[in-house]
Image 1 (cartoon, rainbow, N blue to C red):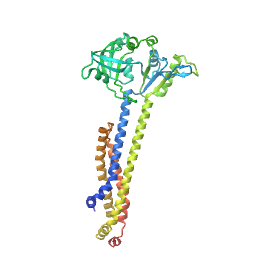
Image 2 (image 1 turned 30 degrees about the vertical axis):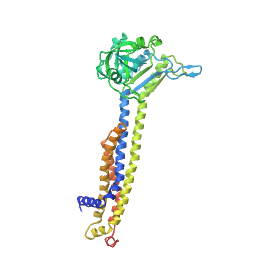
Image 3 (image 1 turned 60 degrees about the vertical axis):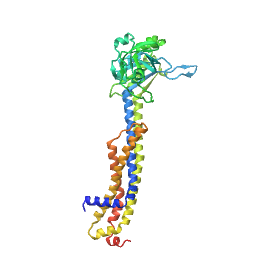
Length: 410
């Protein structure tokens, strides 16, 4: 008997008991749908982490000032103005593995443009900041060396600030005021979205660091050339840990810190943080897929149960087929094809349900999902394998029946 004939017989047998066949396939349908949906959700989470890595900048280390202890009370990181622009330039100059070191000053304030205003964060930066953070200019241009040395009153706007102040109008060439200081908008930044803490990275204004220090912030920072942080981009392929050790040694030497004394600065390797988060997302995806696969196993057990019932019900039919010349392998293939057909039909229906479920999650829960063809192929292949595995024992049992006993079965 050919495989095509076996498939026709299997489909005819399944149509005889439609409700039972549907209930049998339900476990496979739910299992395949769950696997596809969970992998889609996990892949979406991984893609989001990868976007955050690109948004923050690759191979990135952030250098922060240290803490101040007064009366036995530690004030926390950043309470001491221990970093200067010269520290950043020394790192870039004396450590060849560093591609860019960008000192940064941070402030907050109300930005006013005509009758509109917006409370936001502004940063005083150098041109190296754009390279270190992989941040491109969307429209207009970035400030140049003349703006940096002359404390030019120019600014670049993040997408959120530009939209809040100017709507759909072009902000290039417009004048805004930050702490009563007028700035000319010379460019807008490429959108970056949210960071690891869920904060909007596009809600920002960038200006030359000299302008922020001398014209906006003023005070002691203008005298000390202190900075709030330094963004350091390490060259591709370099050992981040070794670069950290070199920076720590250089800064301790520059700050005259004696052996045994604590650092007056702190280093944060964002690449390690993001890599750990990406790995946790990958493990979570595998865990969700493994949990969803339990439904497939339950569906497989259901297939075995129904096939055993089917063998019992059709014992006389099996005896009749053997009596007219059917071989044991024909009976084996017939019931095996029937089990695999159940699993495959359930798998195809599960694919449609999984795609629909993924789309529903993306729309209703506003989660990012990423459908992967390999996940669909994996789920269907697993369903077919379950059909073979759980269908083999009933099929083998049917093929080993003795014709005379099968014909006499009541």
